[in-house]
Image 1 (cartoon, rainbow, N blue to C red):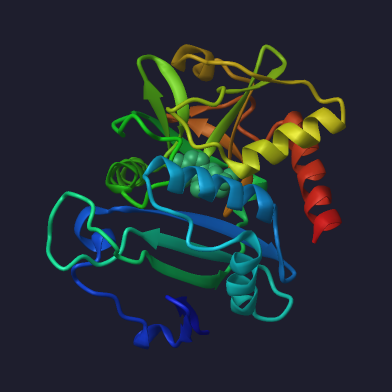
Image 2 (image 1 turned 90 degrees about the horizontal axis):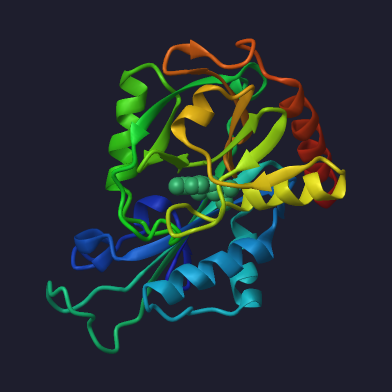
Length: 277
Ligand code: PMP
């Protein structure tokens, strides 16, 4: 499967970047992950709008138009299978290592596709653990600088969790690589957009399908104590979709099984996927 690097499609073994690339030296770049179901990019415009925002926030110009991006990514999709595209843009390779932005350096543009693996836990639920949110103050930017997320996810895994649910000043922000939803006193709630969370595309799709199907969902802050008393907890991301959390910090959530609200919204989500791909 070829990958895309700076205008060319190459076997992955032949795709090389400079050790002076600022992505490598500083984590100076942004990325996107876009699912493609049956060969069709899912919520493509929304992902590209978020990419624009990420690039603008870190002062990298978008090197391509929407149509150019589509032209770059579509050839990476093999056949009609379910895949996701990873794309990354860094500030480029400067002549020397210097924190200051280099002048007149083209960004490095990389993209590849991978099959979406089966994820049976989506139907059975996962365990999650709460951890203190140790990330920076610009979590709305999809930066490649993921060291805190990596460490948090690893710690969650070592404690038997498939996701870390992050808590900042007593409030739930999001997962280490997902957004969080909870059913609190019968009401579906997700934290509001802010600099503390990534504006997840899956989150936005859930809010849209809830609106269209008269399922009430509030964008509202929730405390760690709210979460501990939730009837249901879900995580949501492009790669994992909508996943029930059935155990939080070793205690059963709801009945310890995926709840009725998840059943309903997951069914709507799967139907939405089918309808647009
Ligand atoms: N928050 C974080 C920190 C993430 O890494 C992700 C996954 N990209 C998400 C939320 C979910 O975003 P999306 O639904 O767009 O995949």
